[in-house]
Amino acid sequence: GAVVSQHPSRVICKSGTSVKIECRSLDFQATTMFWYRQFPKQSLMLMATSNEGSKATYEQGVEKDKFLINHASLTLSTLTVASAHPEDSSFYICSAGRGQGMSGYTFGSGTRLTVV
Amino acid sequence: GNSVTQMEGPVTLSEEAFLTINCTYTATGYPSLFWYVQYPGEGLQLLLKATKADDKGSNKGFEATYRKETTSFHLEKGSVQVSDSAVYFCALSRDDKIIFGKGTRLHILP
Image (cartoon, rainbow over all chains, first blue to last red):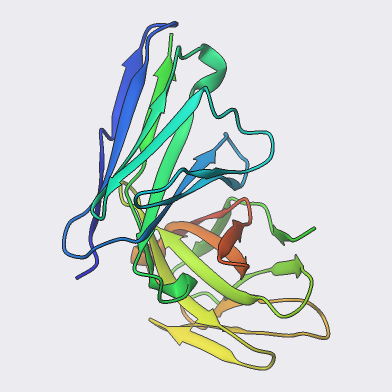
């Protein structure tokens, strides 16, 4: 149990376009989802915390208008990279949980975004 | 602020060798500590955890002990296998957020 599906796994887009990444909990209801970003050779950095039915809480330095997060249901959260630029190229990964403490969170497989 | 520092890789070992991946942390209070593993082409998986000082987490032959006095949570395995080749992330949890180290890539040679 506790499977999280993240889609797409890889995406290449042109500069200026928007990209949507989906994170789905397949066999449980996720009250909270987290979105992380990983730069090459860097740590996974928390971007935002997404609670179902409410606005996402963004970490300091993360542009809310650039990284749009929607957690419309207990099984789906989306991250939209608006007007993507090459510097947005990165590995994005989500995690979802039922609020059982941090060990109860399951990670998606990640999305490799390349903006050309 | 809270942070995690782990040894840089890649680490290359022969099969059946002893493994240590160092991890130290900086945090206020008493965080929970974790090791996550990412196998090629897969997402992150929880490997083991410890929630208080002197706790030892263990799984699949891996162990790590929560050392408050040295603020460390080093990952060890007595005899590694080729199938252990992966990226290992040390992490701490405070205030319902996870903070990760940079990850250590482990290569095990047959």
